[in-house]
Length: 317
Image (cartoon, rainbow, N blue to C red):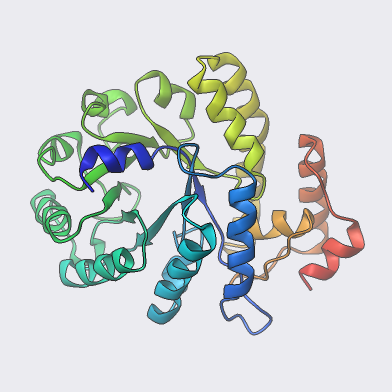
């Protein structure tokens, strides 16, 4: 797969899907297969979006190595070749990143989100060597996860400009590095798909970007409609729809994050909508009854389908 082929696949709403756990907090692979089939049936198919597995929001950093690769394989098989399935590799050194990337490639993912090796305290030159080595070692597409909020996780537009010959770097998940503005990277839109990670999907699309991080995989019709409107050039309508949902959810998550870490998000919403997938792995705690009711009211205000209160309450006990 060359870069152009990968770019055709890695675009649209990038669905950051959660990882289901059973009552023992082990990965529930059967449920993940069922969820994958549901995401496909809901429209997250090749050409319209991406299913991204084991990302940070999907608790990928918490997974055992054996769980990680089996989870990727489960989603690939369950998608039946109908969806673009990506994995995620977090903060590995070059040797480990290449090993993991090859293993992911072997089970059939068509792309990987790869974070910089922040625990090596890399310079910009180190990051260049890292991504060049990974690109040279595999035959699938890479989306670079630029993370300027982490020490050593940010890369400058100048660094990305030096990656234009890295054949398998297909996309950049973009948040601007300190001292730069959002628009500074978009001279590269003909080389890389620039994927918004700054809650600015409409601006991204207007500037030539080709996707954004989907914030609500528990209800795919929402993001698929936002993307459809942008593709049709209906930017005002897309912005109104997006702003009606995403900022309120992010504000709710911000408030609950202060109480006990990563505890709201997709898992709680999916439970409220009748698709329980277990808790987050500890030490984060689930929402309390009052927070859950607040979230229920928020989701109801969007007009999304909700499960009965007894069903939703029992699913997260």
